[in-house]
Length: 215
Image (cartoon, rainbow, N blue to C red; front, side):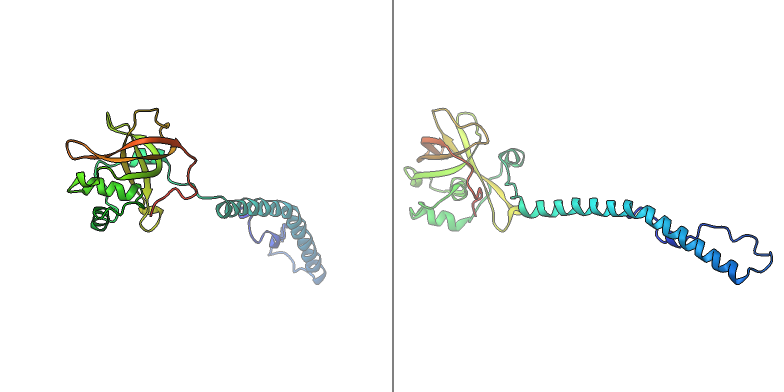
């Protein structure tokens, strides 16, 4: 409808003739005005269906976009995105407070993010050896011999600042496929070189949680 020229109905569509000729009579001017009005109305009526159709189509498309944006649930950050955003630098979630809390043995409520911080910053890894854990996350490829990584996005303020946390899982059984969500039950173990990992007792494939993020 925006493509239609404005003011077309004011175009009389007739030639006024040579302005240098004899003066028009009042009757001539009346007939000319009537003819111009009739032609303008005919042009407006001819274009009206096109304009109406364009407006309706544009309105339907715009409404569909708005309703879709409001009604459809937002997609969560995917494991595929995690594979492209993984960093070799450990990300700390909670920093010193998390490590201090972990050193007291109060780790029952720790998620993947908190344990990732402990694994990256613990100065006495042996003190965590034997801690029982049950964690849920999605499966990511691990280093050679590490089994796999259990990963989760951690949000500080909003999805824009989401960062990936991961903990290594040692598992001798068949791991869940990459990108699938799983619940791991096991025990924190300290390697001979002081690195921590989780020795899994069970790995159970589960549906993606309603809220896939940690905070």
